[in-house]
Length: 427
Image (cartoon, rainbow, N blue to C red; front, side, top):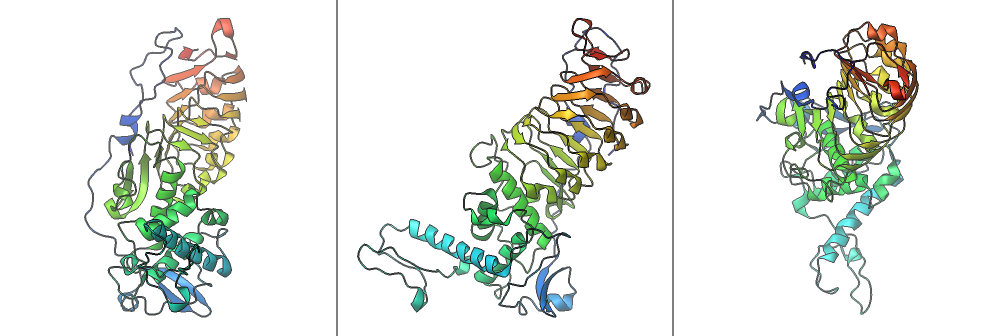
């Protein structure tokens, strides 16, 4: 995306004229060329589980001949299912844990159904003879309910509700970072999986949705729950609706409504809490715009798993910790807007690796140490704000030589922390 010069008309001055201005309005910078047209075509990529030797593999975009097989070749024992989604696959559950999770999922459904009954003896479920609940006086009903046909795949009758639930569980257990979270009914990860199986009106099926789309939808639901979407967000933005997640407010995808998320913009919406670990699997993400919320916690080293990232706009939150060194490996970055947080530590000289960087705001944080001379390598840099920190020493002359439109530091004469002869504002 071509970048218009920022603050091109601002004059260089060492006075306090408009010194408190944050230059936080990035809307035109981020969204001026956004194409809001939505494609009406549906993604027809498939995922079908096929036997290959002793393994079961997941394949996308199979030939028509294989697609015509539908789900006829799904193996009933799914304990050896592997989903090739990432190299380490560190979150994969073993067969026993998967089966326990699937059984837990069935029990979850049974408890929901029981909770909706007015009396403990008014049963209208479908059970096998061995699963029928006891109706003896003062006894607690026990059951292993059969999933209702309404949860089956509507486009493929052979994909039963049970096969669909097991398949979704297999896919998600293959990418979840901490497998234990799936067994914690209160965790965002567990709630998102249960929603995907039981409550999602879109009713994604293994036979007509790619594993990548299923995972993307799951990640966005985890993000919704973990940041207080159901309790604290100001606007729900169509989250958890039956539309494709690309149509949920604040999300923009490549290829329209059936593509993959490139931009997320949910600023000023009272998002709380940390980023879920799974969030860093949105590998097509280019813009993360979540400023003016209540996000907390640290930024993970896993941010380097977003290799296409261009804009990180997280100012005015409650983030802490340090800027992870792995972020400086994301050389596509053009905007780093993280002012007004609680981020500290020293600013690594590796920031000079961000050769495409144009806009940096780090003011009002807790940074210490010297201002790295490697910033002078950022030949495209237009703006950098460093005031309101605990930097010491001098602004490097090579940085001054870039002739920036805006450069701020703590260089007021009556409270001199940083020596700067070229700053446009001393604060």
